[in-house]
Amino acid sequence: MPIMEWTTVAEIGTAGGTLVLAVATFAAVRSSNGAARLAERSLQSAIKPLLMPSKLSDEGQKIGFVDEHWVKVEGGRGTAEVAEDAIYLTMSLRNVGPGLALLNAWQFYADRLTGEAARPDFAGFRRLTRDIYIPSGDLGFWQGVFRNSTDPAFAEAAQRIRSREPFTVDLMYGDVEGGQRTISRFSFIPTQEDGWMPAVSHHWNVDGPAPR
Image (tube, rainbow, N blue to C red; front, side, top):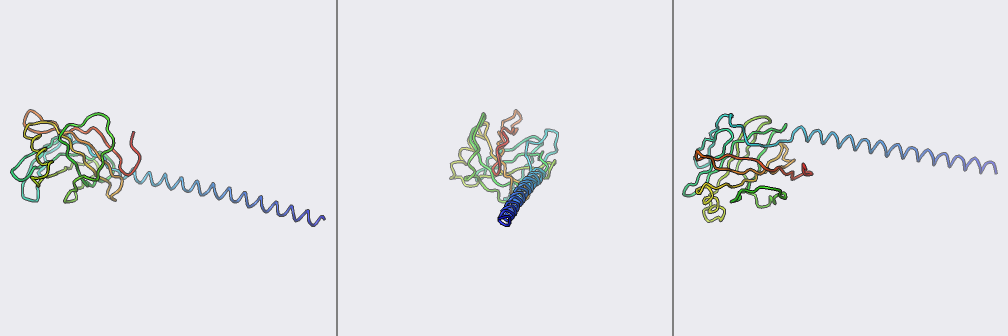
């Protein structure tokens, strides 16, 4: 009988030790996962870009299109030109985020979109035909073009630009790894000197939680 009692005690002790080890292992794994998530967030924060209109005091930039059409956009400004077979759009930008920005795609709206809005569906965005990078804390630009005169957006854009009415451009971009995609909404407002002044109203995270 005493042998049975000591065997039972040993089994209970073994079970207790196993339970303590399991709890310790779970706590260690949970702590490790938390540290890994924190490290990942820290890394993402360190390479996340954020685009804003550039300053009015920033230098002008000369921007070329594939058909050898050239545009000069001044600091804090945008341009919109309607030609017979193309519409050329540009915007002077500054990357105020800590990471390198890689511009991906854009969408035009024949209106000035203001107020609260849900994140746009980017499935129909127009892809850029070349990579445009803007370093952290530095000046850069965006350029877009309509070339298909039968596209309904071509006629809408031409009408807004010729009549000097505001319009909106959503710009999607991400970090240098192609992640952390963001959509920023810019209104193009006509100025007295026949130019355009962009103003940003919203930023949406595509690959993460909303900033608000």
